[in-house]
Length: 215
Image 1 (tube, helix red, strand yellow):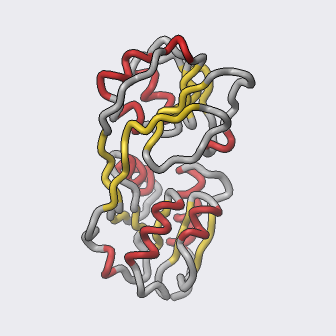
Image 2 (cartoon, one colour):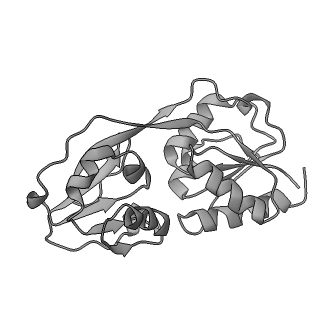
């Protein structure tokens, strides 16, 4: 069985690794980014009707300013983000099952998106960057990979991976979306995208690639 390499930053990397190991996969963590909080000021909550959270990092790294927005209903990208928001005292009214493009958002509402520096625009929402995923300069272990499956959780991770790895012919890519797969570029042994943009679908794909026959 081929090992699975997980590139996402902590603490998401360890969560993905735990799920993969429970599926019987051998996992190696090589985070390409480290998430850090930014200095920010919360706007007047009276100017908005709801809060969009497309990553649990917004809750983890929001700091004291986040508490000023607890009166706003939250629209979360997925169940993990929703659970963390509830634990922080927010009222979650909606939790998606895919990526930000598949979120169900109310029409005609003034929505505030708490996001990372590198983020996708969500509808007409006002976005504020409150954290940043900064590239790790020299990720330990990335240069010596052989006959492995690499889990790519975002297009940005795919682009960074392509910058770092030259010898690709023995490596297979399991990407969370078609955009993430395309960002990896060409020259890999195999590149496939999950049927849904979530961790469960990505790991199902990764398990198949790890267990598939052939060199």
